[in-house]
Length: 113
Figure 1 (spheres, rainbow, N blue to C red):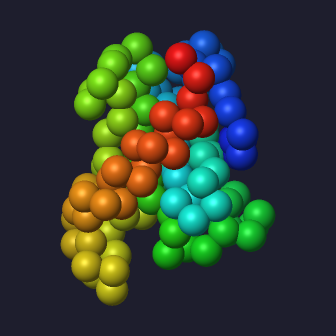
Figure 2: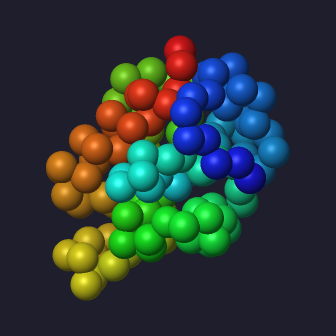
């Protein structure tokens, strides 16, 4: 597991393929601090790592990155940690378009292609 605060090359993410899944790398984005944690079997492990490093659970959203794909297929907004009725997110999908856009912007700023 790794926390990326500045940037990471797409090739580094591609090298993570196969560590847990053949086509994707799980990630958790801190939309407040603009950090990205990558490479675990479970989103909850990445969530715990970020919380241990000062993130607030409310700011954390789980995603899957498909480094071999492009455009809207690059990021999937699907994770069990996203189920939080208290924040009006009742499914695994990130339902709030503004939060999805924040995630896209953060990932695009961190991942160098």
